Length: 250
Ligand code: BGC
Image (tube, rainbow, N blue to C red):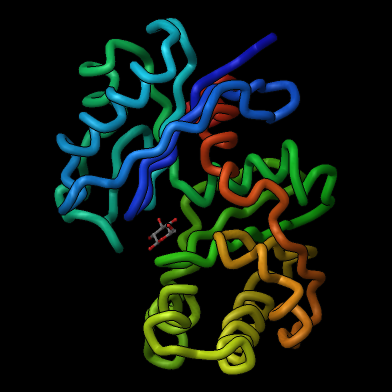
């Protein structure tokens, strides 16, 4: 069995597990710790080290880490909802040095999109699938006939004078106390904008709130088919592990 370890670093929690790369299933417990206050790279790295020691294994394990920022060639380039210390931070190299193993570092939504394309809601989807994760921010993954085009950052499309994620993320819904009807109007406005620019064949909506899709999908008025993510909480872990195992972005 080919396996790899996936770690998903988020604004509130850092989680990891060992993944079977053939089935996309977790084959260890899912270890989770809170993200340290401030989310500085060194503190986050300490937690990741802890998770790897909890999971056991060896330096030969393929290990993928996903993170909420633009990531090019292992360097984190942005910091929308995390510490500014991550801007232009050589994350893969620093993590590899401390953790004594190769590290594959990717954007969190890209990891989730790859997981959905390999094992979830976008398996075999032809043409352009756009996955959007609605959480603290909005993450995006472009999958063209199943192949990832990384770092698309559609959460930061400017719309009506705002960064889109400020108005349409799940955090915005919670912050402003919007009911599903009011939030769905914003999602419709946002998704229509994305539709107009990219003409996707399919949208996949992820993030914790996607488990409540039956309540808000019917209120979204767009032409493109809309599907909820299938891997829910584990998509980042599975996609990071899969990309590490296959090293698609090296
Ligand atoms: C970040 C993206 C990330 C998304 C979801 C955005 O604010 O810019 O890189 O994928 O949040 O976490």
